[in-house]
Each structure stands twice: as structure tokens, then as C-alpha cells.
Image (tube, rainbow, N blue to C red; front, side, top):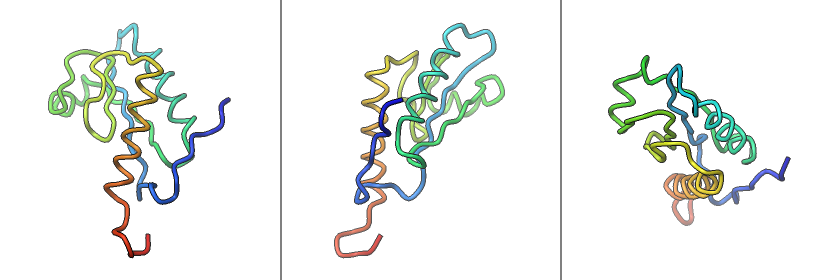
Length: 114
């Protein structure tokens, strides 16, 4: 297993960033996407990301609200990031960018203690 990707202390968000895989029963590509996302979450520093699965049939209002048109889909921080199965490279880039953005948004102002 690769070394966990470290987020500098100055860029850590206060709470984990939620990464959701939106699935449905009978979805052939969903298991591969769930495995990929789970692995990517595990490769990041503990506590940086939180993995969740969302069944679009049970949570149809949420799926529609974020723009899911088909499964599998991946949402990062409550926003649709991929409307289909992502590649490992694109998912890694999206997670790193979202973590950095979340950390900057939640970082204390200059001169304030974290």
C-alpha cells in the first residue's frame, strides 16, 4: 500500500471531507467504482476523507439535487464530481484539489490560532 498522502497541518480542514459513491442495485460498474473510491480514501491521511455509499433509489431527492443522471456517480463534499466511473488518476486529482480547497476554506485567518 502506498504511503498515505499527507495534508500539511496549515491546510487541514476541521472535519473530514465526505466522498460519496452514488449507486443502484443492478449497476454493473458500481462495485469497481466503490472499490476505487474506498482505496483512494484509505490512501489519504486518516481522518482527511470520509467514505459513504448512497443508494439513489432510497435517496432520489438528494441524487436529483446534486445532478446525478446515472450510476455510478461520485460526489465530493456534497457536489457531483463524476457523473460516471472516474479513472484513478482523475479521482486522485479531484480528491487532492477538494481537500486543498476545503482546508483553505476552513483554515484560520492569518494571526489566528487553529
